[in-house]
Image (cartoon, rainbow over all chains, first blue to last red; front, side, top):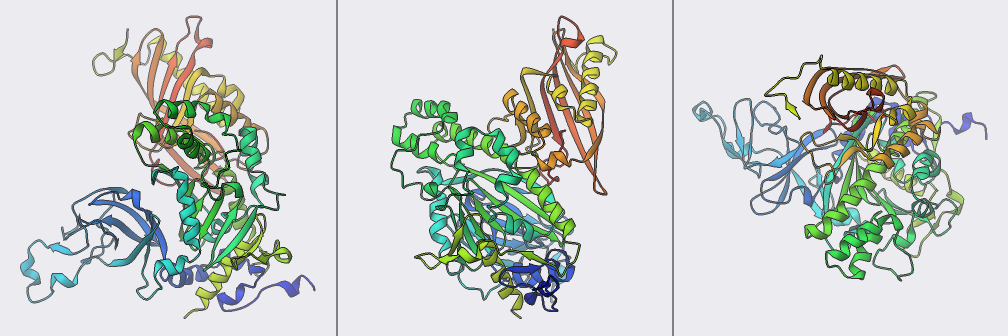
Length: 430
Length: 172
């Protein structure tokens, strides 16, 4: 076959995705980006929050569903709603605080005020609307919202399947992911944000790209202790696999012995770097088993669980992507840790914050190198937009697992193929 | 004896303040030149280099920061920047920074705390990125003279610390 014969030339975006390759245009074509916003981000379940970010009545955070600004807010009854951050009068945003607590939201322009449920409560000088408009029909637009395992998702699509059906076999892996609380619930500790000049799918692929790790992250590997470097030496270990879980989701197991943190035969030594933490936890009154559960989970779980289209539960943190334009994406790296008595969780979370800072964020030892790689993809992909981006690694060794999940080595592109199959299905859907 | 700005303004011409400002400017040039080993030598062994996210916090231990380096992390960071494995550092933006608007916050014979404003322009592949921030240096003055002065704490509070800066291959 000649190189030319492998080019992908088609009019319909869905035809630009083949099983083992996708056209470079997927990263660079603004018209495709516009269609993605409506056909994917406004039609599927999009991750918007972790429940701990809105802990009590009136707690809220601002975020986006695709490009659309929303507020995630807990109401008086404890129900989490997702409201479009747009006044029904003339379109102003009703909230510009990234997070906080409120009794409601008041538009700064003409002081239309809304309840935590988004209902329009007050209009100044209401006589002008007598016989014109009824307040009851002018609530903030509310998105359908549902959560599983503390992960909150919202969608503009009233007809979409229930969240639990959309997640399917992902639920098992969410349950496993949350075990890194070591017997305590998980809470958000803080977040890094950064932007890069590249398409959102470059990030989507990266969270299931084991292949790049020892190359792009050589600098980070050189800076960690030997135990941590060994833990991440999955390149040639056949036990380390990636499963495609359906609906574009996938799980990449870098440290399979940490996939289920409850499965612990006690033989693995705790890392020496956490000796001080172990001593602190013991002095706080924890027994050896409780200490071991917390400290063995310091690097999180042994996998990246990648949910299509915008969130990855990556080992010890959440990685959230926000498409801004065809060549700009904002990314959050959200640090998490156990939520419990301060004498127990504070020392654990201080250590988790330092582990997170070491790799993540705009000045981490890992993130800037990822961002450089992605910048190079966006620049290079301007050339020959019909030339394919290859996602064929490991195709010949991909087999179904006993659960029926397409499975291959952790360095293979099984997860990307799964994500692009979902992309193709959603982009075909009129 | 420590003199507080609100009560007794220490002039910028105070020789102790001049020593601090000269050190801050030397640090700025070393960072723009990416002379990271020499840069690290300006810090005391117990010194911290901090770029917080939370604009108000002083409790860096219990909050997530962009950078929270003690001597060990700073040393590893310098290695990362110069050893040639980190693709972001190998192809880093060129930077030019201006540090000015110096205000002596407290001055004694053994320590000077100086607040300043830093405006940094980073150029890479046709783009100029602007990094603006409030800076505070704590500088330990040496009895042996200015060559022995060391930074014990530097905090850079970016105006967009809670926003989304680009990932960086240089230091602030």
